[in-house]
Amino acid sequence: MASKLLQLAPHEAENHLELSLRQAFQLLEPKLRPPFPLKILTSDECPDLTRAILYGALTETHLAKTHIKHLHATVSDGYVLFVNLLARIVNELYDKLAETAKTQVLWAAGEMVDVSAVGFSGLLVSLLRQIVGGDFGSGNLWLCFEMVSLFLGKWDCLLEEDPLILTSALYNFLRLLADHCRATVDSRLDALKRLEIEFCVKMLREQFGLCLKFGRDLIRLLQDLVHVPEFRAIWRDLVSNPREFGVAGFLDVAQIYSMRTSSRYFSLRLTPEAETQLRFMLTHVKFGNQKRHQTWFASKFFCSPERETLIVDIVRFICCAHYPPREIIHSNTIPRWAVIGWLLKSCRKNYVEANAKLALFYDWLFFDERVDKVKNIEPALSLMVHSIPHYIELTHALLEFLFLLVDNYDMEQKDMIANRVSSSFTLLINQGLSRNLENLTSGEIIPPPLKEKLRCFLSDTRVGTAQEIQPSKTLGHLIPMEVGTALPEEHLTDV
Amino acid sequence: MLSIKDIVPAALNNITTQFILLDKGKVATEGQSKTCLALVADESAAVHFQFWGEECDLFKPGDIIRLTNGIFSYNRNHLLLRAGKRGSIEKVGEFTMTYVETPNISEMRWVPDANNSKKYVQEAVISPYSRIFPPML
Image (cartoon, each protein chain N blue to C red):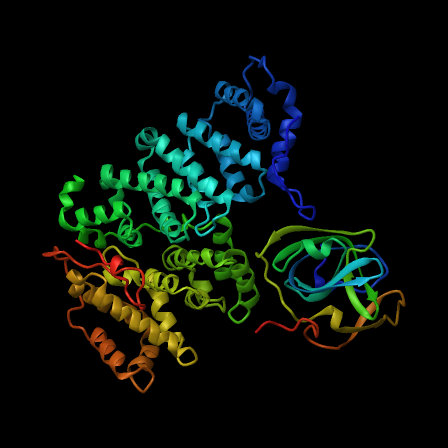
Protein backbone atom coordinates (compact mmCIF):
# COMPACT_ATOMS: atom_id res chain seq x y z
CA MET A 1 0.00 0.00 0.00
CA ALA A 2 1.62 3.22 -1.13
CA SER A 3 1.91 5.96 1.44
CA LYS A 4 0.95 9.47 0.49
CA LEU A 5 3.30 11.72 -1.41
CA LEU A 6 2.05 14.98 0.08
CA GLN A 7 0.90 16.12 3.48
CA LEU A 8 -1.73 18.64 2.50
CA ALA A 9 -3.61 20.62 5.10
CA PRO A 10 -7.37 20.12 4.97
CA HIS A 11 -8.03 23.47 3.30
CA GLU A 12 -5.49 23.16 0.53
CA ALA A 13 -6.55 22.40 -3.01
CA GLU A 14 -5.32 19.29 -4.73
CA ASN A 15 -2.10 19.74 -6.63
CA HIS A 16 -2.06 19.07 -10.36
CA LEU A 17 1.46 17.71 -10.47
CA GLU A 18 0.86 15.24 -7.65
CA LEU A 19 -2.43 14.25 -9.20
CA SER A 20 -0.87 13.46 -12.57
CA LEU A 21 1.74 11.26 -10.92
CA ARG A 22 -0.76 9.49 -8.70
CA GLN A 23 -3.15 8.85 -11.56
CA ALA A 24 -0.39 7.36 -13.70
CA PHE A 25 0.61 5.15 -10.78
CA GLN A 26 -2.90 3.94 -10.16
CA LEU A 27 -3.41 3.24 -13.85
CA LEU A 28 -0.21 1.30 -14.35
CA GLU A 29 0.27 -0.26 -10.92
CA PRO A 30 -0.01 -3.89 -12.12
CA LYS A 31 2.75 -3.24 -14.68
CA LEU A 32 5.08 -1.97 -11.97
CA ARG A 33 5.51 -5.36 -10.32
CA PRO A 34 8.00 -7.87 -11.69
CA PRO A 35 8.12 -9.68 -14.01
CA PHE A 36 8.27 -6.58 -16.19
CA PRO A 37 6.80 -6.84 -19.67
CA LEU A 38 9.48 -7.12 -22.30
CA LYS A 39 7.66 -5.34 -25.10
CA ILE A 40 9.07 -2.04 -26.18
CA LEU A 41 7.02 0.90 -25.06
CA THR A 42 5.62 3.37 -27.54
CA SER A 43 6.57 6.99 -27.16
CA ASP A 44 3.06 7.61 -25.82
CA GLU A 45 3.39 5.10 -23.05
CA CYS A 46 6.82 6.18 -21.80
CA PRO A 47 5.81 9.41 -20.02
CA ASP A 48 3.02 7.70 -18.09
CA LEU A 49 5.26 4.86 -17.06
CA THR A 50 7.92 7.35 -15.94
CA ARG A 51 5.34 9.19 -13.86
CA ALA A 52 4.12 5.94 -12.36
CA ILE A 53 7.63 4.78 -11.52
CA LEU A 54 8.44 8.14 -9.96
CA TYR A 55 5.35 8.06 -7.78
CA GLY A 56 6.14 4.49 -6.77
CA ALA A 57 9.77 5.27 -5.99
CA LEU A 58 8.75 8.14 -3.72
CA THR A 59 5.86 6.45 -1.91
CA GLU A 60 6.77 2.74 -1.74
CA THR A 61 10.04 2.82 0.18
CA HIS A 62 10.39 -0.97 0.33
CA LEU A 63 9.93 -1.28 -3.45
CA ALA A 64 11.91 1.79 -4.46
CA LYS A 65 14.94 -0.15 -5.68
CA THR A 66 12.73 -2.28 -7.89
CA HIS A 67 11.11 0.81 -9.34
CA ILE A 68 14.46 2.34 -10.17
CA LYS A 69 15.66 -0.88 -11.80
CA HIS A 70 12.53 -0.77 -13.90
CA LEU A 71 13.38 2.81 -14.85
CA HIS A 72 16.93 1.87 -15.84
CA ALA A 73 15.55 -0.92 -18.00
CA THR A 74 12.98 1.18 -19.82
CA VAL A 75 14.57 4.61 -20.05
CA SER A 76 14.97 5.98 -23.55
CA ASP A 77 15.40 9.72 -23.00
CA GLY A 78 18.50 9.87 -20.80
CA TYR A 79 16.21 10.19 -17.75
CA VAL A 80 15.22 13.72 -18.81
CA LEU A 81 11.54 13.36 -17.92
CA PHE A 82 12.21 11.62 -14.61
CA VAL A 83 14.72 14.25 -13.52
CA ASN A 84 12.54 17.15 -14.67
CA LEU A 85 9.53 15.82 -12.78
CA LEU A 86 11.62 15.23 -9.70
CA ALA A 87 13.03 18.77 -9.91
CA ARG A 88 9.51 20.14 -10.29
CA ILE A 89 8.39 18.23 -7.22
CA VAL A 90 11.28 19.76 -5.28
CA ASN A 91 10.69 23.29 -6.60
CA GLU A 92 6.93 23.31 -6.18
CA LEU A 93 6.12 20.84 -3.43
CA TYR A 94 9.14 20.21 -1.22
CA ASP A 95 7.57 21.78 1.88
CA LYS A 96 4.45 19.69 1.48
CA LEU A 97 6.16 16.34 0.93
CA ALA A 98 5.60 13.59 3.48
CA GLU A 99 8.71 12.86 5.54
CA THR A 100 9.36 9.49 3.93
CA ALA A 101 8.91 11.03 0.50
CA LYS A 102 11.62 13.60 1.27
CA THR A 103 14.04 10.79 2.13
CA GLN A 104 13.13 9.08 -1.12
CA VAL A 105 13.66 12.27 -3.12
CA LEU A 106 17.20 12.55 -1.79
CA TRP A 107 17.85 8.91 -2.53
CA ALA A 108 16.46 9.20 -6.07
CA ALA A 109 18.59 12.29 -6.69
CA GLY A 110 21.68 10.30 -5.74
CA GLU A 111 20.66 7.55 -8.15
CA MET A 112 20.33 10.11 -10.93
CA VAL A 113 23.81 11.45 -10.24
CA ASP A 114 25.18 7.90 -10.40
CA VAL A 115 23.79 7.37 -13.90
CA SER A 116 24.74 10.91 -15.00
CA ALA A 117 21.12 11.53 -15.88
CA VAL A 118 20.47 14.45 -18.21
CA GLY A 119 19.60 17.48 -16.09
CA PHE A 120 20.84 16.11 -12.77
CA SER A 121 22.60 19.41 -12.03
CA GLY A 122 19.30 21.28 -12.19
CA LEU A 123 17.86 18.79 -9.74
CA LEU A 124 20.76 19.28 -7.35
CA VAL A 125 20.36 23.07 -7.59
CA SER A 126 16.65 22.69 -6.79
CA LEU A 127 17.53 20.71 -3.68
CA LEU A 128 20.24 23.15 -2.60
CA ARG A 129 17.75 26.00 -2.87
CA GLN A 130 15.41 24.32 -0.41
CA ILE A 131 18.01 24.61 2.36
CA VAL A 132 17.03 27.72 4.30
CA GLY A 133 19.88 29.67 5.87
CA GLY A 134 19.07 30.63 9.45
CA ASP A 135 16.52 27.85 9.83
CA PHE A 136 17.80 25.53 12.53
CA GLY A 137 14.84 23.16 12.50
CA SER A 138 15.71 19.49 12.31
CA GLY A 139 14.15 19.02 8.87
CA ASN A 140 16.18 21.80 7.32
CA LEU A 141 19.42 20.73 8.99
CA TRP A 142 18.79 17.17 7.84
CA LEU A 143 18.46 18.34 4.22
CA CYS A 144 21.67 20.36 4.53
CA PHE A 145 23.49 17.37 5.98
CA GLU A 146 22.23 15.06 3.24
CA MET A 147 23.21 17.47 0.48
CA VAL A 148 26.73 18.19 1.72
CA SER A 149 27.19 14.42 2.21
CA LEU A 150 26.00 13.83 -1.33
CA PHE A 151 28.45 16.36 -2.74
CA LEU A 152 31.32 14.87 -0.77
CA GLY A 153 30.31 11.29 -1.49
CA LYS A 154 29.88 11.76 -5.23
CA TRP A 155 32.76 14.22 -5.66
CA ASP A 156 34.61 12.35 -8.40
CA CYS A 157 31.53 11.73 -10.49
CA LEU A 158 30.36 15.33 -10.19
CA LEU A 159 33.79 16.70 -10.98
CA GLU A 160 33.87 14.66 -14.14
CA GLU A 161 30.30 15.17 -15.30
CA ASP A 162 29.59 18.80 -14.40
CA PRO A 163 32.24 20.65 -12.43
CA LEU A 164 30.20 23.85 -12.35
CA ILE A 165 27.65 22.23 -10.03
CA LEU A 166 30.44 22.04 -7.50
CA THR A 167 30.85 25.82 -7.65
CA SER A 168 27.11 26.19 -7.00
CA ALA A 169 27.46 23.89 -4.02
CA LEU A 170 30.47 25.90 -2.81
CA TYR A 171 28.47 29.13 -2.94
CA ASN A 172 25.71 27.48 -0.94
CA PHE A 173 27.84 25.89 1.74
CA LEU A 174 30.12 28.88 2.26
CA ARG A 175 27.04 31.00 2.83
CA LEU A 176 25.28 28.44 5.02
CA LEU A 177 28.40 27.84 7.07
CA ALA A 178 28.55 31.54 7.92
CA ASP A 179 24.98 31.33 9.27
CA HIS A 180 25.69 28.07 11.09
CA CYS A 181 28.78 29.52 12.74
CA ARG A 182 26.70 32.39 14.04
CA ALA A 183 24.23 30.08 15.75
CA THR A 184 24.55 29.72 19.46
CA VAL A 185 26.33 26.56 20.45
CA ASP A 186 24.22 23.64 19.27
CA SER A 187 25.78 20.21 19.11
CA ARG A 188 23.51 19.15 16.25
CA LEU A 189 25.33 21.68 14.15
CA ASP A 190 28.84 20.46 14.97
CA ALA A 191 28.77 17.43 12.70
CA LEU A 192 27.14 19.44 9.96
CA LYS A 193 29.65 22.28 10.20
CA ARG A 194 32.52 19.81 10.03
CA LEU A 195 31.17 18.41 6.77
CA GLU A 196 30.54 21.86 5.34
CA ILE A 197 34.08 22.91 6.22
CA GLU A 198 35.43 19.69 4.74
CA PHE A 199 33.63 20.29 1.43
CA CYS A 200 34.55 23.96 1.14
CA VAL A 201 38.18 23.45 2.05
CA LYS A 202 38.45 20.53 -0.39
CA MET A 203 37.10 22.73 -3.17
CA LEU A 204 39.39 25.64 -2.33
CA ARG A 205 42.50 23.53 -1.89
CA GLU A 206 42.02 21.01 -4.70
CA GLN A 207 39.92 22.84 -7.27
CA PHE A 208 40.83 26.49 -6.87
CA GLY A 209 40.71 27.01 -10.61
CA LEU A 210 37.04 26.04 -10.50
CA CYS A 211 36.44 28.30 -7.50
CA LEU A 212 37.78 31.23 -9.46
CA LYS A 213 34.86 30.88 -11.88
CA PHE A 214 32.77 32.16 -9.04
CA GLY A 215 34.14 35.65 -9.29
CA ARG A 216 34.47 38.39 -6.69
CA ASP A 217 31.63 37.23 -4.43
CA LEU A 218 33.96 34.42 -3.42
CA ILE A 219 35.88 37.02 -1.42
CA ARG A 220 32.69 38.41 0.07
CA LEU A 221 31.66 34.95 1.25
CA LEU A 222 35.09 33.93 2.49
CA GLN A 223 35.34 37.05 4.62
CA ASP A 224 32.42 35.93 6.74
CA LEU A 225 34.43 32.85 7.66
CA VAL A 226 37.68 34.53 8.59
CA HIS A 227 37.27 33.44 12.22
CA VAL A 228 37.13 29.72 11.32
CA PRO A 229 40.66 28.27 11.67
CA GLU A 230 40.62 26.30 8.40
CA PHE A 231 39.58 29.43 6.51
CA ARG A 232 42.06 31.63 8.29
CA ALA A 233 44.73 29.32 6.91
CA ILE A 234 43.25 29.67 3.43
CA TRP A 235 43.27 33.47 3.77
CA ARG A 236 46.89 33.39 4.81
CA ASP A 237 47.76 31.48 1.68
CA LEU A 238 45.53 33.59 -0.56
CA VAL A 239 47.19 36.77 0.58
CA SER A 240 50.80 35.72 1.04
CA ASN A 241 51.21 32.59 -1.07
CA PRO A 242 48.77 32.47 -3.98
CA ARG A 243 50.87 30.00 -5.94
CA GLU A 244 49.97 27.45 -3.25
CA PHE A 245 46.66 27.04 -5.06
CA GLY A 246 48.38 25.83 -8.19
CA VAL A 247 46.44 27.84 -10.75
CA ALA A 248 48.50 29.24 -13.60
CA GLY A 249 48.13 32.98 -13.80
CA PHE A 250 46.71 33.37 -10.33
CA LEU A 251 49.27 35.52 -8.59
CA ASP A 252 47.26 37.79 -6.35
CA VAL A 253 44.02 37.62 -4.46
CA ALA A 254 43.14 41.06 -5.81
CA GLN A 255 42.75 39.53 -9.29
CA ILE A 256 39.52 38.00 -8.07
CA TYR A 257 38.00 41.46 -7.67
CA SER A 258 37.99 42.02 -11.39
CA MET A 259 35.80 38.96 -12.04
CA ARG A 260 32.09 39.68 -11.97
CA THR A 261 30.07 36.92 -10.33
CA SER A 262 27.46 35.45 -12.65
CA SER A 263 23.89 36.29 -11.66
CA ARG A 264 22.93 32.63 -11.57
CA TYR A 265 24.67 32.27 -8.20
CA PHE A 266 22.44 34.85 -6.56
CA SER A 267 19.27 32.84 -6.83
CA LEU A 268 20.91 29.84 -5.17
CA ARG A 269 20.17 31.05 -1.65
CA LEU A 270 16.55 31.93 -2.35
CA THR A 271 13.87 29.26 -2.40
CA PRO A 272 11.89 29.23 -5.67
CA GLU A 273 8.94 30.53 -3.67
CA ALA A 274 10.87 33.52 -2.33
CA GLU A 275 12.11 34.24 -5.84
CA THR A 276 8.59 34.03 -7.29
CA GLN A 277 7.20 36.35 -4.65
CA LEU A 278 10.01 38.91 -5.04
CA ARG A 279 9.72 38.96 -8.82
CA PHE A 280 5.94 39.30 -8.48
CA MET A 281 6.37 42.27 -6.15
CA LEU A 282 8.80 43.96 -8.54
CA THR A 283 6.58 43.29 -11.55
CA HIS A 284 2.98 43.72 -10.43
CA VAL A 285 2.68 45.53 -7.12
CA LYS A 286 2.07 49.27 -7.40
CA PHE A 287 4.30 51.71 -5.55
CA GLY A 288 2.21 52.94 -2.63
CA ASN A 289 0.29 49.67 -2.40
CA GLN A 290 3.08 47.44 -1.28
CA LYS A 291 2.52 47.35 2.47
CA ARG A 292 0.39 44.21 2.64
CA HIS A 293 2.59 42.19 0.29
CA GLN A 294 5.66 43.28 2.25
CA THR A 295 4.04 42.23 5.54
CA TRP A 296 3.17 38.80 4.15
CA PHE A 297 6.66 38.34 2.74
CA ALA A 298 8.31 39.34 6.01
CA SER A 299 6.11 37.12 8.14
CA LYS A 300 6.85 34.15 5.90
CA PHE A 301 10.58 34.62 5.32
CA PHE A 302 11.93 36.68 8.25
CA CYS A 303 9.69 35.13 10.87
CA SER A 304 12.54 34.63 13.31
CA PRO A 305 15.65 36.78 13.94
CA GLU A 306 18.02 34.07 12.66
CA ARG A 307 16.27 33.96 9.31
CA GLU A 308 16.97 37.63 8.75
CA THR A 309 20.27 36.72 7.05
CA LEU A 310 18.22 36.00 3.96
CA ILE A 311 17.97 39.79 3.53
CA VAL A 312 21.64 39.89 2.47
CA ASP A 313 21.01 37.32 -0.27
CA ILE A 314 17.85 39.07 -1.41
CA VAL A 315 19.62 42.43 -1.77
CA ARG A 316 22.33 40.85 -3.91
CA PHE A 317 19.66 39.04 -5.95
CA ILE A 318 17.66 42.20 -6.60
CA CYS A 319 20.71 44.19 -7.68
CA CYS A 320 22.22 41.54 -9.92
CA ALA A 321 19.60 39.00 -10.93
CA HIS A 322 16.43 40.97 -11.49
CA TYR A 323 16.33 43.61 -14.22
CA PRO A 324 12.86 45.08 -14.70
CA PRO A 325 12.05 45.71 -18.37
CA ARG A 326 11.57 49.29 -19.55
CA GLU A 327 7.75 49.18 -19.41
CA ILE A 328 7.88 48.19 -15.76
CA ILE A 329 10.46 50.87 -14.90
CA HIS A 330 8.25 53.54 -16.45
CA SER A 331 5.07 52.26 -14.84
CA ASN A 332 4.18 52.86 -11.21
CA THR A 333 5.33 49.43 -10.12
CA ILE A 334 7.41 49.44 -6.96
CA PRO A 335 11.04 50.03 -8.02
CA ARG A 336 14.02 47.95 -6.92
CA TRP A 337 15.46 50.72 -4.74
CA ALA A 338 12.22 50.91 -2.71
CA VAL A 339 12.20 47.18 -2.01
CA ILE A 340 15.84 47.37 -0.96
CA GLY A 341 15.03 50.32 1.32
CA TRP A 342 12.31 48.27 2.97
CA LEU A 343 14.67 45.30 3.38
CA LEU A 344 17.37 47.45 4.99
CA LYS A 345 14.82 48.89 7.40
CA SER A 346 13.71 45.34 8.28
CA CYS A 347 17.14 44.40 9.60
CA ARG A 348 17.14 44.07 13.35
CA LYS A 349 20.72 42.87 13.66
CA ASN A 350 23.69 45.16 12.99
CA TYR A 351 25.80 42.58 11.21
CA VAL A 352 22.93 41.65 8.88
CA GLU A 353 22.42 45.30 8.02
CA ALA A 354 26.15 45.76 7.41
CA ASN A 355 26.33 42.69 5.21
CA ALA A 356 23.24 43.81 3.33
CA LYS A 357 24.82 47.21 2.62
CA LEU A 358 28.00 45.47 1.51
CA ALA A 359 25.92 43.33 -0.84
CA LEU A 360 24.28 46.51 -2.15
CA PHE A 361 27.58 48.29 -2.83
CA TYR A 362 29.78 45.33 -3.68
CA ASP A 363 29.95 45.87 -7.43
CA TRP A 364 30.61 49.60 -6.89
CA LEU A 365 33.97 48.76 -5.33
CA PHE A 366 35.32 47.01 -8.40
CA PHE A 367 33.16 48.37 -11.22
CA ASP A 368 34.70 47.90 -14.64
CA GLU A 369 32.63 48.99 -17.61
CA ARG A 370 34.12 46.19 -19.68
CA VAL A 371 32.68 43.38 -17.55
CA ASP A 372 30.17 44.90 -15.14
CA LYS A 373 26.58 45.98 -15.60
CA VAL A 374 25.31 49.43 -14.68
CA LYS A 375 22.02 47.86 -13.68
CA ASN A 376 23.83 46.19 -10.77
CA ILE A 377 24.89 49.52 -9.29
CA GLU A 378 21.82 51.64 -10.07
CA PRO A 379 19.60 50.61 -7.13
CA ALA A 380 22.09 51.89 -4.52
CA LEU A 381 22.27 55.39 -5.97
CA SER A 382 18.53 55.51 -6.62
CA LEU A 383 17.91 54.60 -3.01
CA MET A 384 20.23 57.33 -1.75
CA VAL A 385 18.69 59.94 -4.03
CA HIS A 386 15.04 59.03 -3.52
CA SER A 387 15.44 58.93 0.26
CA ILE A 388 15.81 62.71 0.17
CA PRO A 389 14.21 64.38 2.05
CA HIS A 390 11.90 62.05 4.00
CA TYR A 391 14.45 59.35 4.84
CA ILE A 392 17.57 61.50 4.78
CA GLU A 393 19.16 59.49 7.64
CA LEU A 394 19.25 56.53 5.29
CA THR A 395 21.04 58.57 2.63
CA HIS A 396 23.60 59.66 5.24
CA ALA A 397 24.05 56.13 6.53
CA LEU A 398 24.55 54.71 3.04
CA LEU A 399 27.05 57.38 1.99
CA GLU A 400 28.97 56.97 5.22
CA PHE A 401 29.04 53.22 4.75
CA LEU A 402 30.26 53.57 1.16
CA PHE A 403 33.10 55.87 2.15
CA LEU A 404 33.98 53.57 5.04
CA LEU A 405 34.20 50.67 2.60
CA VAL A 406 36.44 52.64 0.25
CA ASP A 407 38.85 53.45 3.06
CA ASN A 408 38.83 50.10 4.83
CA TYR A 409 37.68 47.25 2.62
CA ASP A 410 41.12 46.41 1.31
CA MET A 411 43.73 48.92 2.35
CA GLU A 412 46.17 47.69 -0.25
CA GLN A 413 43.71 48.43 -3.02
CA LYS A 414 42.33 51.67 -1.63
CA ASP A 415 43.18 53.77 -4.68
CA MET A 416 41.76 51.27 -7.12
CA ILE A 417 38.54 50.99 -5.11
CA ALA A 418 38.19 54.77 -4.85
CA ASN A 419 38.69 55.01 -8.58
CA ARG A 420 36.05 52.37 -9.26
CA VAL A 421 33.52 54.04 -6.96
CA SER A 422 34.10 57.31 -8.82
CA SER A 423 33.46 55.49 -12.09
CA SER A 424 30.26 54.11 -10.68
CA PHE A 425 29.01 57.59 -9.76
CA THR A 426 29.97 59.00 -13.15
CA LEU A 427 28.35 56.23 -15.15
CA LEU A 428 25.14 56.56 -13.20
CA ILE A 429 25.13 60.33 -13.60
CA ASN A 430 25.49 59.84 -17.34
CA GLN A 431 22.38 57.68 -17.16
CA GLY A 432 20.38 60.67 -16.07
CA LEU A 433 20.19 60.65 -12.30
CA SER A 434 22.16 63.85 -12.10
CA ARG A 435 19.28 66.20 -11.42
CA ASN A 436 18.49 64.62 -8.10
CA LEU A 437 22.17 64.20 -7.33
CA GLU A 438 22.49 67.97 -7.10
CA ASN A 439 20.28 67.77 -4.04
CA LEU A 440 23.01 65.76 -2.41
CA THR A 441 25.92 68.06 -3.12
CA SER A 442 24.26 71.46 -2.78
CA GLY A 443 22.36 72.91 0.13
CA GLU A 444 22.29 71.64 3.67
CA ILE A 445 21.00 68.17 2.99
CA ILE A 446 24.07 66.27 4.07
CA PRO A 447 26.71 67.30 6.60
CA PRO A 448 29.86 69.04 5.26
CA PRO A 449 32.37 66.18 5.76
CA LEU A 450 30.21 63.79 3.74
CA LYS A 451 29.48 66.48 1.16
CA GLU A 452 33.19 67.12 0.64
CA LYS A 453 33.96 63.44 0.20
CA LEU A 454 31.11 63.09 -2.25
CA ARG A 455 32.33 66.08 -4.26
CA CYS A 456 35.72 64.39 -4.50
CA PHE A 457 34.20 61.26 -5.95
CA LEU A 458 31.98 63.14 -8.35
CA SER A 459 34.76 65.26 -9.76
CA ASP A 460 37.47 62.64 -9.88
CA THR A 461 39.43 63.23 -13.09
CA ARG A 462 40.87 59.76 -13.07
CA VAL A 463 37.55 58.44 -14.27
CA GLY A 464 37.88 56.77 -17.66
CA THR A 465 39.16 53.28 -18.37
CA ALA A 466 39.31 51.43 -15.11
CA GLN A 467 42.78 51.39 -13.61
CA GLU A 468 44.39 47.99 -13.62
CA ILE A 469 44.45 46.35 -10.25
CA GLN A 470 47.94 46.66 -8.78
CA PRO A 471 49.28 43.58 -7.04
CA SER A 472 49.40 43.76 -3.26
CA LYS A 473 52.89 44.58 -2.09
CA THR A 474 52.31 43.80 1.54
CA LEU A 475 49.64 41.94 3.39
CA GLY A 476 46.32 43.76 3.63
CA HIS A 477 43.74 43.90 6.36
CA LEU A 478 40.38 42.84 5.09
CA ILE A 479 37.28 44.24 6.67
CA PRO A 480 35.39 42.00 9.08
CA MET A 481 31.61 41.82 9.19
CA GLU A 482 30.91 44.10 12.10
CA VAL A 483 31.26 47.27 10.08
CA GLY A 484 29.98 50.26 11.97
CA THR A 485 30.24 48.61 15.36
CA ALA A 486 33.32 48.03 17.50
CA LEU A 487 35.69 45.68 15.69
CA PRO A 488 36.44 42.67 17.88
CA GLU A 489 40.16 41.97 17.83
CA GLU A 490 39.91 38.33 16.95
CA HIS A 491 38.02 39.07 13.74
CA LEU A 492 40.86 40.97 12.11
CA THR A 493 42.86 38.81 9.77
CA ASP A 494 46.04 38.00 11.56
CA VAL A 495 48.72 37.26 9.03
CA MET B 1 -15.60 32.66 -12.38
CA LEU B 2 -17.18 35.88 -11.15
CA SER B 3 -15.26 39.05 -10.48
CA ILE B 4 -16.06 40.45 -7.06
CA LYS B 5 -17.44 43.66 -8.55
CA ASP B 6 -20.09 41.57 -10.33
CA ILE B 7 -21.35 39.81 -7.20
CA VAL B 8 -24.83 40.85 -6.08
CA PRO B 9 -26.68 39.96 -2.86
CA ALA B 10 -29.01 37.00 -3.28
CA ALA B 11 -30.35 34.05 -1.36
CA LEU B 12 -28.59 31.74 -3.77
CA ASN B 13 -25.45 29.60 -3.43
CA ASN B 14 -24.07 30.17 -6.85
CA ILE B 15 -21.02 32.34 -6.38
CA THR B 16 -17.79 30.90 -7.69
CA THR B 17 -14.90 33.33 -7.47
CA GLN B 18 -11.25 33.63 -6.52
CA PHE B 19 -9.66 36.24 -4.26
CA ILE B 20 -6.77 37.01 -1.98
CA LEU B 21 -7.17 37.29 1.78
CA LEU B 22 -6.00 40.70 2.93
CA ASP B 23 -6.79 40.77 6.62
CA LYS B 24 -8.54 38.72 9.27
CA GLY B 25 -10.36 39.95 12.36
CA LYS B 26 -10.68 38.27 15.72
CA VAL B 27 -12.44 34.95 16.08
CA ALA B 28 -15.93 35.27 17.56
CA THR B 29 -18.70 32.80 18.34
CA GLU B 30 -22.04 32.62 16.66
CA GLY B 31 -24.18 30.01 18.30
CA GLN B 32 -22.06 26.87 18.37
CA SER B 33 -19.57 27.90 15.76
CA LYS B 34 -16.47 30.00 15.54
CA THR B 35 -16.68 32.81 13.04
CA CYS B 36 -14.17 35.29 11.79
CA LEU B 37 -14.63 38.35 9.64
CA ALA B 38 -12.11 39.09 6.92
CA LEU B 39 -11.30 41.46 4.08
CA VAL B 40 -10.78 39.77 0.71
CA ALA B 41 -10.31 41.25 -2.75
CA ASP B 42 -9.51 40.68 -6.38
CA GLU B 43 -8.45 43.10 -9.11
CA SER B 44 -11.98 44.45 -9.48
CA ALA B 45 -13.22 45.02 -5.92
CA ALA B 46 -13.06 44.07 -2.25
CA VAL B 47 -15.66 42.45 0.02
CA HIS B 48 -16.08 41.25 3.59
CA PHE B 49 -15.85 37.50 3.93
CA GLN B 50 -16.97 35.37 6.84
CA PHE B 51 -15.02 32.26 7.80
CA TRP B 52 -16.82 29.54 9.75
CA GLY B 53 -15.57 26.92 12.13
CA GLU B 54 -12.21 25.38 11.27
CA GLU B 55 -11.81 27.80 8.37
CA CYS B 56 -11.02 30.51 10.92
CA ASP B 57 -7.69 28.97 11.86
CA LEU B 58 -6.61 27.49 8.57
CA PHE B 59 -6.43 30.56 6.30
CA LYS B 60 -4.01 33.41 6.71
CA PRO B 61 -3.47 36.80 5.04
CA GLY B 62 -1.80 36.41 1.67
CA ASP B 63 -3.64 33.15 0.88
CA ILE B 64 -5.34 32.97 -2.50
CA ILE B 65 -8.70 31.28 -2.07
CA ARG B 66 -11.19 29.76 -4.47
CA LEU B 67 -14.81 29.91 -3.35
CA THR B 68 -17.29 27.50 -4.94
CA ASN B 69 -21.05 27.82 -4.56
CA GLY B 70 -20.77 30.62 -2.06
CA ILE B 71 -23.42 33.08 -0.97
CA PHE B 72 -23.45 36.87 -0.59
CA SER B 73 -26.16 37.98 1.78
CA TYR B 74 -27.02 39.82 4.97
CA ASN B 75 -25.95 38.24 8.23
CA ARG B 76 -26.88 40.37 11.26
CA ASN B 77 -26.86 43.57 9.23
CA HIS B 78 -23.51 42.83 7.66
CA LEU B 79 -23.42 42.09 3.96
CA LEU B 80 -21.03 39.14 3.80
CA LEU B 81 -19.60 36.68 1.35
CA ARG B 82 -19.26 33.17 2.74
CA ALA B 83 -19.17 29.53 1.75
CA GLY B 84 -22.42 28.75 3.47
CA LYS B 85 -23.81 25.25 3.93
CA ARG B 86 -23.54 24.28 0.28
CA GLY B 87 -20.33 26.02 -0.65
CA SER B 88 -16.66 25.41 0.00
CA ILE B 89 -13.37 27.25 0.01
CA GLU B 90 -9.89 25.99 -0.62
CA LYS B 91 -6.46 27.54 -0.72
CA VAL B 92 -5.06 27.55 -4.24
CA GLY B 93 -1.97 29.71 -3.80
CA GLU B 94 -0.25 32.52 -1.98
CA PHE B 95 0.89 36.08 -2.59
CA THR B 96 0.83 36.28 -6.38
CA MET B 97 -2.33 38.28 -6.89
CA THR B 98 -2.94 42.00 -7.18
CA TYR B 99 -6.06 43.54 -5.72
CA VAL B 100 -7.94 46.77 -5.06
CA GLU B 101 -9.52 47.78 -1.76
CA THR B 102 -12.10 50.04 -3.35
CA PRO B 103 -14.92 49.64 -4.22
CA ASN B 104 -15.96 47.39 -1.35
CA ILE B 105 -19.26 45.76 -2.23
CA SER B 106 -20.06 45.07 1.42
CA GLU B 107 -19.92 48.82 2.05
CA MET B 108 -22.68 49.60 -0.44
CA ARG B 109 -26.36 50.17 0.01
CA TRP B 110 -28.28 47.74 -2.15
CA VAL B 111 -31.94 48.02 -3.09
CA PRO B 112 -34.26 45.79 -5.08
CA ASP B 113 -34.22 46.46 -8.79
CA ALA B 114 -37.28 48.48 -9.81
CA ASN B 115 -37.96 46.04 -12.67
CA ASN B 116 -37.26 42.81 -10.88
CA SER B 117 -37.67 42.75 -7.12
CA LYS B 118 -35.73 39.54 -6.84
CA LYS B 119 -32.58 41.23 -8.06
CA TYR B 120 -30.55 43.79 -6.17
CA VAL B 121 -28.70 46.82 -7.49
CA GLN B 122 -26.23 49.24 -5.92
CA GLU B 123 -27.93 52.39 -4.78
CA ALA B 124 -25.19 54.21 -2.86
CA VAL B 125 -21.72 53.88 -1.51
CA ILE B 126 -21.69 53.76 2.30
CA SER B 127 -17.91 53.87 2.42
CA PRO B 128 -15.33 53.61 -0.38
CA TYR B 129 -13.08 51.44 1.80
CA SER B 130 -13.86 48.86 4.46
CA ARG B 131 -14.67 50.58 7.74
CA ILE B 132 -13.59 47.44 9.62
CA PHE B 133 -10.28 46.87 7.81
CA PRO B 134 -8.94 50.24 6.69
CA PRO B 135 -6.17 50.23 4.04
CA MET B 136 -2.60 49.75 5.28
CA LEU B 137 -0.62 52.91 4.63
